[in-house]
Image 1 (cartoon, rainbow, N blue to C red):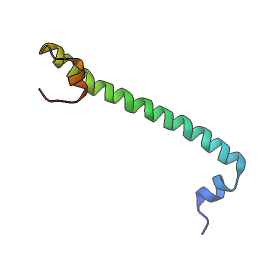
Image 2: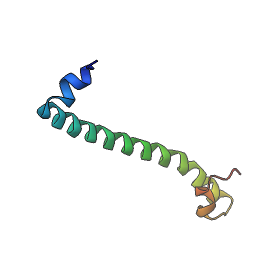
Image 3: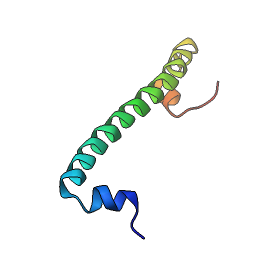
Image 4: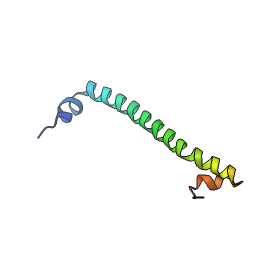
Length: 65
């Protein structure tokens, strides 16, 4: 059974190239957003490590205070 993906992407080289380009852009943007979210989670831990005069490396290990 031929899927919609097969019909419009796999069997059409022009559509396949467009899909791969757009998917790469989407994938990159998702990666950037994931890294931003991780950074937002780390910042409070780094601030807490400074408050307790602990090394930042401990904060990056995700230890609880």
